[in-house]
Image (cartoon, rainbow, N blue to C red):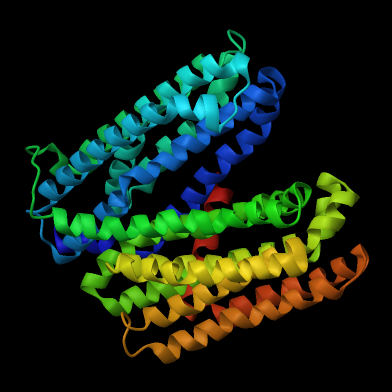
Amino acid sequence: MPESTAGTLTGGRLLAKNTISSLAAQAVPVLVSLFAIPILIGQLGTDRFGVLTLAWVVIGYFSLFDFGLGRALTQLLAEQLGLGEQEKLSSLTWTSLLLMLGLGLTGAAILVAVTPWLVYSALKVPLPLQQETLASFYLLSASIPCVIVTAGLRGILEVLQRFDLINAIRIPAGIFNYLGPVLVLPFSRSLVPVVLVLAASRLITCLAHYLLCLRAFPYLKGRIEFSKEVLPRLLRFGGWMTVSNVISPLLAYVDRFLIGAVVSISAAAYYATPSEAVSRLSLVAGTIANVMFPAFATSYIQDRKYTELLFVRSLRYLSFVLLPVVLVGTTLSQEILSLWLGSEFASHSYRVAQWILIGIYVNSLAQIALCLVQAVGKPDLSARLHFVEAPLYLVGLYWLVSKAGIEGAALAWLARVTADMVLLFVLIQKYLPGRWKRLRQLFLLLGVPMLSFIPAFVLIGPIAKLVYLFIVLPAWIVVTWSVLLAPEERQAMLRIVSERTLRFKMD
């Protein structure tokens, strides 16, 4: 693939288009789940639905068995494209995919081995459901290699910025993840056919990714070969990615268990419910990071100044989109929770929701910085950072939960993600030398809007809060347009609006 072609993979309009389409692809299955989950609970019953949720968790958790090789493949392919070295693309790709297939088979064997222990001992599955659950988990194990290989194939499409192809699969696959079990209900209430449908969908998804990769990436059509030369780089990058992938979920969910142990189970529910709800906003930053990761990796080889520009723009657009949503949620958290879960539940949870919403905003900025650190081939830095953070966070979390309950847990999480963001921004300077002044100004520009969260904690009554939002939200739009966005970005947005308006009038 020539260098000129590689350069088109980092174009601003393409990245913006891919980000918007990926956000839509993430949102559609979530909306479908709101329709499907009540039906599944009503028809399967609470116990069977509980096992089904575990099936979804198992599929997601065993994706860790790729040991970061999916992201490693994306980073190394992007690097080769940036260098214009095409001769290594085939061996690199096939070595990664074969290694991931082997890891997937290993993960499947492990799940088969531990399934009897999970069903009969660890999970305390009701006796009438044990045989269904046992058969269901065995079916799930067969889908694990497909899930892991799919991650590698998706990485190939990501490095080519073919998110149109990725989303063409992601949307129907995400919808079928919830509607598939619903379609089984008229014929059976057993878990076995329900999970069989889910496992079959993983196989079909894997085959679809492979066929699209053959079309978009001709180097996959070459001779299948396993190269020992690329193994050290793959394993080194993937190994450090695995450290982060294992520690991060633990840090994200340990607060629930600690609250249940130190305070009460009901307190854990008051904490976990708003936390899970607002955490969906992380999809915005996650989607942007997925699109920007190969763009960062490719541009870093060709033009580090352009890498910095992509990084700055990612932060600007993320702040522009996310801050108004977080501000509304923080200001009206008590009212929103009262409508959703009742006033009694809201009285216990709304402060937690406010702190976690602010943490989501901060952590979203950190995700873009983390994406850049990993894209330049330094996943060890983020992994070491997590190693240092983990014990400090656990000690602070225990102390704050003991002193302030669930609000203390939310404050501990906010403190951790804030420290994470600051340290990642400092680390970035080593890879964007001579640009500290500009990034520092941008950092302050993104931090100052957080002052707008303060009134959300002191205003009382929905009228006062709505008046505040009617004042501050238009002000934020004006400040963003005139200060946060660069002149060329304003011109590009006006051009897009003008083109869409003209097309609408012609239609």
